[in-house]
Structure formats: C-alpha cells, structure tokens
Image 1 (cartoon, helix red, strand yellow):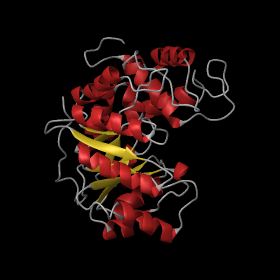
Image 2 (cartoon, rainbow, N blue to C red):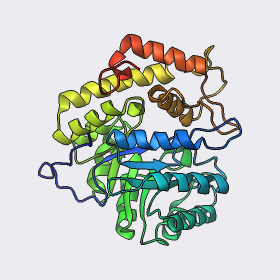
Image 3 (cartoon, one colour):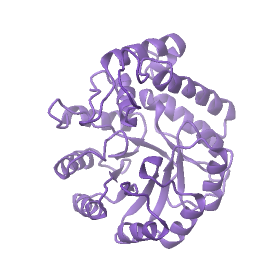
Image 4 (cartoon, helix red, strand yellow):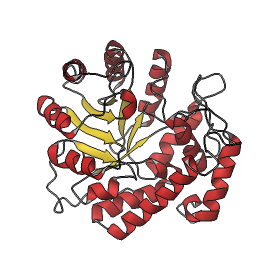
Amino acid sequence: MAPREPDTDQFEDVARYPRVILASVGIPWTGHDTVMEDLFRDEVRAHLGAGVRHLYIFGTAGEGYAVTDRTFDEVCRLFLNEMTGPDAHPMVGVISLSMRTVIERIERAIDMGASAFQISLPSWGTLNDRELTTFFREVVGRFPEASFVHYNLPRAGRVLEPTDYARLAAEHPNLVGAKNGTSNIVMLHDLLTQAPQLRQFYTELGFPQGCQVGPAGYLMSLTTMNMAIGVRFFEAGIRRDWATLFRIQAESLDIFAELVGGGGAEVGSSPFPGAKPHMDGAYEKLLAKVHDPRFPLRLLPPYQGTTDEAYEEFVRRVRAKLPHWLEDPAGAMR
C-alpha cells in the first residue's frame, strides 16, 4: 500500500519538494566490481512494491563516491529504465572531488532522462563561504531545469547550517531539499523553520522530533531491512501519531545498537574484524541483505564490508529482541 498523502491542513507547507519517503537503492556488486543487474532491478521493484516511490542511487549505500564514469552511466541507465511511470520518481546522486566531474555526470544523466539530483560538497578540502557559493552557482545554477537535494554530511568536511540553507534557497529556486541525519533537536528545529522552502529529510534518529516542528520528510535508513515498518513510521508522522512514531524510533535505536554497537557488526569483533570504523555503506548493505538474502555484502575496493558471520549474528540478535522486524507484510518470518 502506498503511503497516504499529507494532510496539508496540519501544517503550512511551503517546501518545493513533496513530503515523502526518500530511500536509497543499494548497488549489488559481483566479485569483479560489476553491477548484478537482475538483483539491482529487483531492489528497485521491491521498494516500489512497498509503496516507496521516491528513490535515489549513488548516495552512501550506492557508493557514489567510488564509481567510475562507466559504472555511473551503466547503473544510471538501469535505474532510469526501471523507474518509469507516473508513480516512480528517480533521483541520481553525484559525489566527486571534482566539480567538473559533477557537472559532466549531471549532463549525461539529463541526456538519459534524469531531472532530479542529489549532490554533496567536494571533500578534499573544506569549502569556505566563497567556495560554497561558487559550487552551488556552477552546479545548481547551471541546470535550472533540474531539481537538487543537498546531502548534508560530515564526510564532506562542512555541514551546512540552517542559515546557509536559507541563503542558498533564496539564491537557487531549484534547490528543493536536504538530507540531514542529525539527531540534534536544535538543528532539526532550525532547519525546518529557517529554510521552509526546502524539504528536510530526517532519518529514524530525528523524524519524530522533526514532525513536532513541521512537515519533515522521511529518509529511510534502518527500516531498509523492513520497508513496511518504514511506511508505517512515515504515515504515523503524517498523522502526528506520536505513540507510534516514538515506539518505532525506540525500536530503531535498538536496531542501531545491534548493528554498530554490541551486535555482530561491531568493528573489531571476531565476526567483523577491522581496525577502524567501516564505511556507512557496509551497514546499509547488511540491512539490504535482511530483506533480500541474495544481496552481497561487498563494497567496492579498497573498502571493507561486513561479513556473512556478522550478518547471521545480527539477524540472530534481532530475532531474539525484535522479531517483528524480520516479518514480511503478511506476517511470515523471513
């Protein structure tokens, strides 16, 4: 069942992008670092079948920072071919240290039929205010026919503040939203109130608190492993059903603890060896494998993914603590 449309009587909603669930489609890789086309198509279809219609590629889970131009073009074509019809809304992520590469990839994706993009700041050096202005002018301002969502994350070196978004939104009418994974309640509040033109997408860590302030969008993260729970979470936000929102958030925090805290995916543990924190995409791949056990855990080299042992331990812990997170919509255990 598709998520219900927002009740616009509840909030004054002036954002340029609809209030929806935004979700990433991970890329399954073969041992030769090529995309597993059939499984990738199944991933897209699984999201659409769950009622999650606004999908993007090449964020964290899609390893947009690691793909070559050839792989970018190949996956982009596959994605856009699957995301057809009036109820499918594709978005293409573009991450690069080179602004020129960002521009060229957007140009090629537009030629393939894309019109919505997700961008991150170049991260070799943290951008100052002048460089930030230049980047948005040269990228967002260059393509007035396209819409842009900014991926606001610490890996980029600079996390944009609400005042930054207020200024950029005024300068660029095709800047329509931002992804913010923060749980800082002051930041959550100020993003919604100081730049209301932009749809702010929050994960399970901040979506309920955002809904208390204004019409936050939902960035599906931990509920990737059970999209039906993610849809219920989003709909609870639309209804302002606080009991359901905070119950699912509390469960999500338990899932998060098992995933990257005391569970089988703990960095440095026996089933998940490593001397440093893993790339975020490693955990995203594990969550994708929960809803489709065929999904490989491999990350593009040189980055280390999780292991099958870590996956099995994670599932065991979730089954013991939150078994309904492993049920399909019909109530059957995965």
